[in-house]
Image (cartoon, rainbow, N blue to C red; front, side):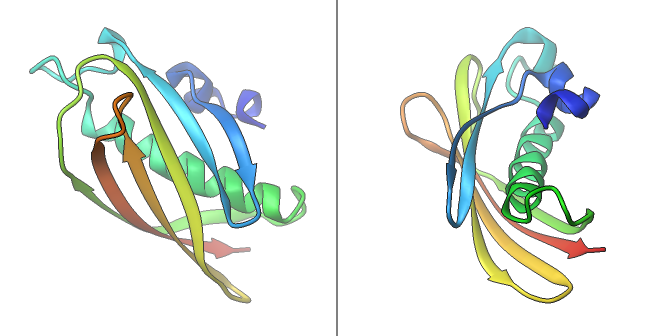
Length: 123
């Protein structure tokens, strides 16, 4: 599924584990995803979060439902300069037309670097 999304593939996103309530996705923090300060760009972090939730929803429905992001609220808590970061997406509420999920992003040391609340629409 990731390979079908060129932007996600460009960032090197990969699914590590699928759970009943979501999944864990990972990416390597390299200079290509740094901001001008040499830390992980907020847009790359947001993309990781959005992709983790989106792929979890698509997987939940076996690829049979189209979805789109409605809202994405990210709190950036700690800078990261290297290593891997992991996003753990969890379904909060699976409705008929909306899915609300939470997502925590941690660095290689287990430090929380971002937290998010994401809403997707089922089309």
